[in-house]
Image (cartoon, rainbow, N blue to C red):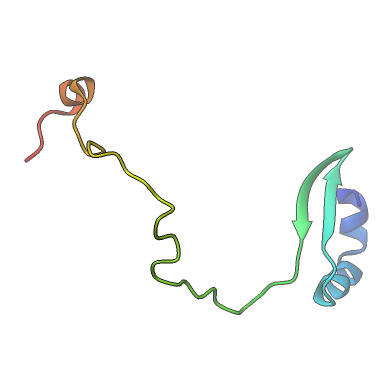
Length: 75
């Protein structure tokens, strides 16, 4: 659906989206937006869900000489 079509049909698009449909709006042939139903259910995060999937090098917090020169020393 084009932006112009969406502007003229906004009320009916909102009804369709409320029923669960996702609508892509495009400018010319390029998709620029997607209308989706607003979900008020909060996303519950689970502590430790990414355990074992994230790795850090031993020197992840080491100061690079160039950064040291630009920003000074750490306190």
